[in-house]
Image (cartoon, rainbow, N blue to C red; front, top):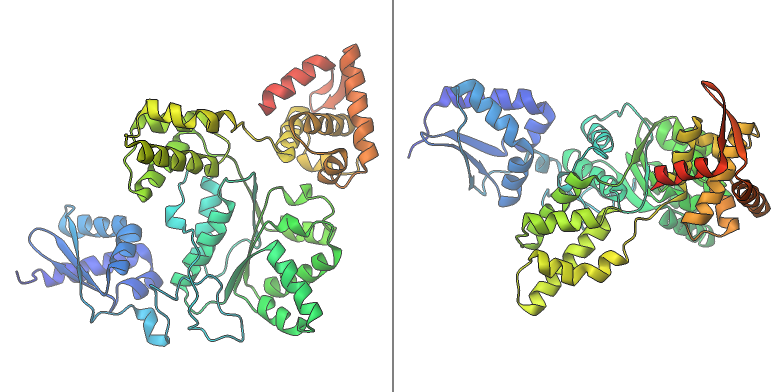
Length: 465
């Protein structure tokens, strides 16, 4: 059937451009897609299925809004393939959106822009947003959508498996799509350190610095790895300053707040907290359910709601544990030739769930104790010796020893690089106070408080749990 309603199509295009912005429209619609309004649907012709999936996944709402405004009603959208169409970004070089735009590492300053490298695994559009990570996700979208980010650096911190790496890789993938000529790099702090050592040994320090300091986006995971490594901290500080002064973006991830990373130089801490620091907590029950459903769909499985709720209710620590449980259930069901029923889940995952106790991190303990004593978490890691801070720090050390497998030196390092003897003394003082059930006295914003030691401990354990 011939395409009709030419004027309406132009109006729809204008509304879509207004909704998604001129840059996005230029890349994905102008000369890259052809819109035909038919009697029963809106047909969008694109070069390949990859582009149709991208438009469908990212611009479905703006398209429907444009249809509603122009036609006064929503209408189904159908996609067709026309190899003669090409995305606008292809005209400026050999960049291919389906292969080279999503690059694991963007080209270094002295590398050709069209270099083809495998894409990173994790993408923003596969990130499940919930109450505990909504701010972190919105910050990532802001970095992606604005060429000049309002905050630099963007610093994520939280426990294991809560989505920090997912967001870092997602930002890099999205930047590669929207600005294909951007120079970007995603590495772990350990990889940064290894490359630095290699550059020193091979006398190629200048090449190393050109590679890292000439980037438009630098994303570094597990930045806490640089703790106690003074030479590497100094090198990274200069790298940070070079990128920041050039108005480019830095995104970092760590398992702890910058002020809670032991043996990190004050200059780096100040740089990190000068941007936006976002904590990511483990997902809530509803988000865990949606993560399981999305993961099952990606695996090609249909999982009943009662099974999803059973797994989500039993495992609350992190996403990796959830996915591991789902994979085990899928494998079990395949081997025994049965369905993923609740009984099968209880049978297959009994040992897995029994071994998956919630993990408590020292940073979580410190945060809970700081909230209880109404001080800042950073005070616990400081050298301050006021009564309230000292008591809170002692409790943090004692409960970290109780709830984790950390040694005294490890606790000292985590608590602001304190000596292990300080940790031992703090633990002994708390134990003695508990044995006598002494009255613990500290200053709060409302005035002095005096509470029995056992009662304080019970409240703190309840808060941590």
